[in-house]
Length: 316
Image 1 (cartoon, helix red, strand yellow):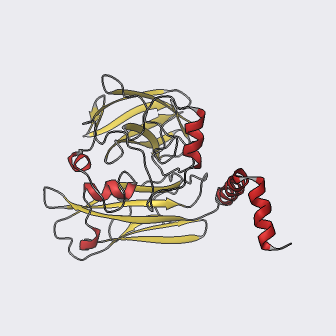
Image 2 (cartoon, one colour):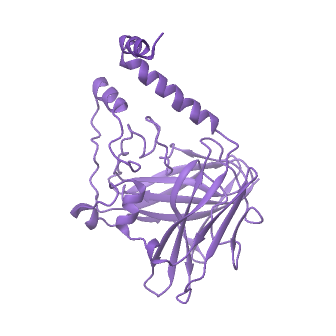
Image 3 (cartoon, one colour):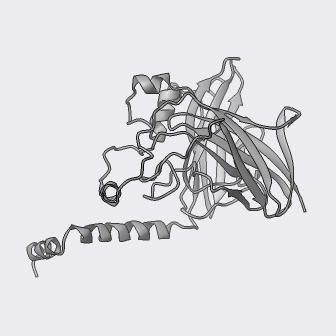
């Protein structure tokens, strides 16, 4: 049978077959990276602080779709030179996580490098943080890199946008947020998020018809960079800790889960959650093992973000 006749046969079977084949290929690709792959630390760039210091911003790529390893600070997760612990995560969410945390360096940092090294599944990777001019980060870079804007574009709305402000309710201890909990028991976290309402969500929250949903699922990508839906959300996740942490309600994924129906701004069908009238968000967390945990809360309006952290001391 000739290639020409094969093409005729495929066309006769209809376009849906093509999507089935592509879908199976995508599924097999994801299955092959469920676990066992490496983690690559990434240097996102730097920005100057008002006191003359600089913030070096890091993220990472966990090549796995499901494996979320815990890599303690030490030989397999460390910074150099100087202190090994620079506040990096020890729990790694799946796939690409951009602008995850910042390391402040002094005003006289100059041309030095700060190196983050991660070893996982037999592979060692490094990210090199410098003050090279090419790595200067501003709000437009963040919005573009995370997918709120197309590469190299901006708008009056995006330039006017300011980051949300996260305020966790409750007392602080020595300037930090600390809570106590017991294994298996829920702890309530109440968080206020203030935002300017920009950028406006691109996608309506109105119920869609089956036809429009199918149309969006089949629509090919229109941009070369990752695409993200604008819209405010707050997401709490485990950042450090010895055991598993579950959250109720389920939290929006802050990592780039690009699957169609993912609860993630990078998923095609994702819709921003409703914003509480008073700006107060409540989430319940439950811990599987005793020990010290750090929870990471990120408010993200699509273009910009703000983070807060809570230390939870969990007793048996």
